[in-house]
Length: 585
Image (cartoon, rainbow, N blue to C red):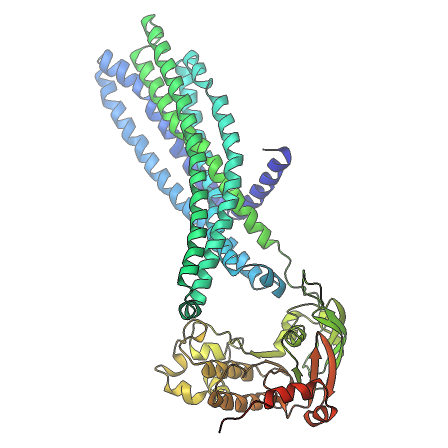
């Protein structure tokens, strides 16, 4: 590992330990208990000398009595210390995982929309689930192995030195080789761990897409294609895991071979010293037991570098996510009750890595209570323009003002409290009907929820559901029809009672009957509100206060329906295209 790489690893690990230091009392108790449990092993080995030399060779009856009792006492202490250690370790690990996931989720819901555009949902889920689990290996698990096995190894080594220091020197000759193997393989394992996280994220993404798009896969015969995609990512995961196992096995195998060579040499020299009377049978059993007891903790300590590399790679990913800049929210201006006056002042916007701007030099003033419809061909910038209002995106140039105040001067929560959104792609939660309607207003009474449902033309179908308002509607409302889901979204917007409303093609995917009900509900929703309507069906916005026509990110026409038709411009052409289709008899 390079010097800069070591500094980076230590910085990550130090930050990780900071989460545990918040529970320093529990951490201290855990370390003390694992220390006591670790030191019981050399204590038991030490008892072999009086047992063999005194009890078996010299046949001392007192030794035969007190040594077994001492062993029972030591293991009783070890059992209590081990229980405390396991319990506190599990508690600390749970706290670490919980805090990391809480911080990651808190960041997840505060990331700008642009981040979601640039990152796959499967990778985001993998970070919060898989990566956090692996972080625990670099957290408390490493401390546990280092302290417990480190103290055990030191105890055994001290016992060996006090028993026969010359034989101990032979054992120590293998340590430089073990250390070299740990460093050599550790770097390789960390790189493989990073690759494994990427492959797991890709597999999670394919799996998530296959679940979300399962109907399209069936209808368009995509089973074989999706199976091939999943097989390819699964194979990548398998190959990477095999490489990790091979590297780990090579490290373990080489370490064990070196230990075996040391053992053979020790047995030979121990025999020579015993022949010259320098080593008793009891001394040899103590030394051999301590040496054999040293192998397991040394092996675990050598393996901890592998776990640490995997954990640090995951921690690097987790902390990179936590450190992602959230949505800019520096506003401190208290706007109070918004009137709903909205102004676009020279606004331009471009998506990252896209040459052509999505919006260019937009100047638009919307008065309180006015309904402004945005129309234009696909890709003209309608949705992008509306997305700037709740600050899902920030303008590249220019500014937006609400009641004469720049949106950036208003706290995000206050700005969005005054905005309701109903889109074609309704977003509902796997919860009750009531909870979905009251989302964002958990304090709403049952009567208020019912009133909003009635105004949205949703109460009739809600009453017919098995549990009424308490019916679970399934993931994203899959147990409801498209029109029913849309009316729930309208009821939610009605209950919020925001002065500013955005309707993004809210009726474009509905059948005639559903559209009629939804359109009536929208008319109730739009009363006395400033409304931006993004429409594909021009018939739904003929009564708008004003229609704004967009083309290639620019405003090209404005006016009422009749005025724009009389102009014979782009709106008239769009209208002609939609209404020139032959009508069914």
